[in-house]
Image 1 (tube, rainbow over the protein chains, first blue to last red):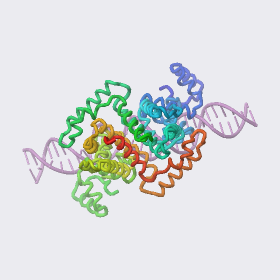
Image 2 (image 1 turned 180 degrees about the horizontal axis):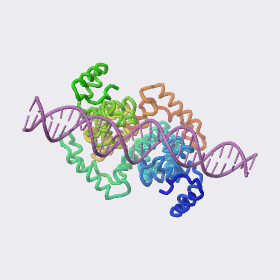
Image 3 (image 1 turned 60 degrees about the vertical axis):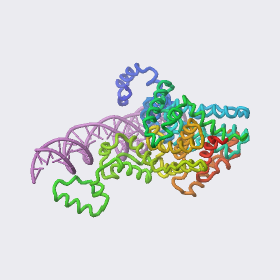
Length: 244
Length: 244
DNA sequence: GTTTAAGAATGAACAGTGTTTAATTTGGTG
DNA sequence: CACCAAATTAAACACTGTTCATTCTTAAAC
């Protein structure tokens, strides 16, 4: 890191800094000049989450990614927790909401849930922030409104619709939180190996205490990819269907 | 703190220590003499969670509660994360599992879920550790086995049963994670005030963008206590029922 | 009873974290 | 150009988890 030197007081020091900046063409010079804004901070933080996971996003890390100082961030963001909320909000803003179509309401909701899940998994660990974030930011409320529109459109009572969307949000966040350790990225081989590992551990259990876990170990560890996810979401939707 | 003195080397020093210990009857003497064991560490940590919440449980805090040094804990516990896992395990060990009774299987499962939820809420923030904990410790597996027994007993296919228990676990943890900020303890007035606050915020939304959220604000924010919780759990159970 | 060996606890440090504050630099305006 | 207000810095503070050489304790062996 060349930016660690003290600020130049003489023109000679600035000269040295300019020479050192030749190695980092756009990083130091450009970014140093562009003003530090909340939008850039959130983007930098999200980039770190995507690359190194949520625990890797620290104020110092974000600041250095912007060629700035940790303290400078506090002029645009009150807290680390506020930064977390902003990140979750920006992510939720990316979710595309459909125009309610009663004929394919289940597919529509499942699609929205999958979008959110994929975003959470693309930014590993961010779902943890989503759980701790303010109950309802404007961006999460936007998704909630979109889901409500679909459900109310097919005749679900408002209260049931609200509770259902609540359950969906919670499940998606929790699923993404525990699912990030199983297969860090779309590595299918690692996922299979992990499932094998769990299966072996299940079979090692004493059958006296864990009869069902042992005898049904194969079925319990079955389910590739996001089958489990689709199952649960579909299950929730099925029990909300006013047709039945 | 009297227990901060160095250990006595002469009998006279011990004499002085005993006199000083008269003021702190059981705290200094007993705890200093009793060997530091993993069980006592976990208990002390859980006591802190109950009193100050999960973020308050730090290695130094746990050590000082035991009259010991932070480093001493690492002779019995590998990590902070291992301590977290142990805490969750000890909590899960408290859940009482029923003998499967097909006639009242829904009540039985709902009861187990409520036990877990109440434990998570009694120890605020611990559900966060439950989500990050190892996918399946022996104690959580025990609960899983108990739920599986009930479901398989009534004829649910093993795979469906496994996925359902998975969904239940995730939902319970997520529900407890976000529910701790609403009403820190059983304060009913605070809960009502909080719901009022959310309702007002909903009504402030622009109706053009949030039509359903605004028009149904009352129903959406309705639901006292754990009605929402019971609704979701019952919903999951209903869609798993082999009768339908 | 003394000595010794093993284990546990200590104290101090290290590398991090979020956050604050006085001092400095900066950019836009009169 | 001078000035002022806002943004940025550098440096600290109070924490966090974790390690390690040293000290102490305890219990067994001689």
